[in-house]
Amino acid sequence: MSAVCFGCRYSHDDAEFRELLSHNEEFGRTVGAGSLVDVMPWLQRFPNPVRTAFREFEQLNRNFSNFVLDKFLRHQESLRPGAGPRDMMDAFILSAGKKAAGDSGLDLENVPATVTDIFGASQDTLSTALQWLLLLFIRYPEVQAQVQAELDQVVGRDRLPCMSDQPNLPYVMAFIYEAMRFSSFVPVTIPHATTANTSVLGYHIPKDTVVFVNQWSVNHDPVKWPNPEDFDPTRFINKDGFIDKDLASSVMIFSVGRRRCIGEELSKMQLFLFTSILAHQCNFRANPDESSKINFSYGLTIKPKSFKINVTLRESMELLDNAVQKLQAEEACQ
Image (cartoon, rainbow, N blue to C red):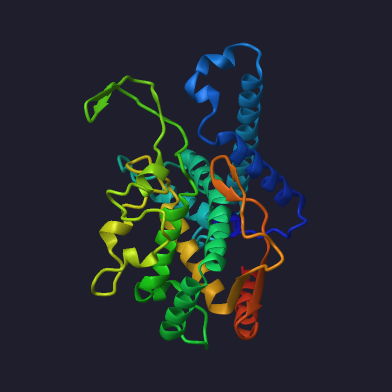
């Protein structure tokens, strides 16, 4: 996501990268639905542990916003007139610059906040999703084998999967949708608030009421999902062998409505690429020396605690090495 948003890649021991990781972990622990401040906002008005945690969270947000603002200012300074976008930050700056008076597009002053939303929301959720995908591969080896069989048939073994393959890989997409539904790794949305008095199904909801969406409940409703506790990607395949788009759109992981996650489409694209490339190139098996029971931590996401898996190449590293070399050559030309 650093490359997508800011056009830079970090080494694992980079100081700025490690600071971002620490912010991400702290954010995930603090922002998870259930904070008492969300339910009883008056707790922030007098000394108590809840107020302390809330103020630490405010400082965390300020630090992260300042980090993105600095990237924004640097991009404005270095973006050459007439040049194409180097990353998402550039694309937003150029789009805002072309906006005509009266248009409803993105204003320049809103670019940092927009990138903050996309970058911030992606860190914990995307890494958690990948952990779940690998966990489900080793728990359901027959599903992994079917994903790999479809990839081999459609993509072949002489190249890596790409986005243009997605329409021809319905089982891969079914696996991703079922993984999101089954895990519901973002079980409850971050808090929102009503801006006016309203009613839902006859329930009166006053203005300024903090509202959460229970996504886990939606994704495990037996009325909508027969046998919801079974992991079954084929539930998303229609009688013609294609993805059931109506059913897929019913999976709730990015919230709903106009305030849904701004990075939904980007996240789905990344999940498809990660899943298809990993399954195309590798076999994943459970570690026989490790207990089959997995524990989880609960915050913004339901995150599997540390677990080990056995990973082997299906063939060689040639395709991956070539892809990395091509990427490095493109970055060197920028």
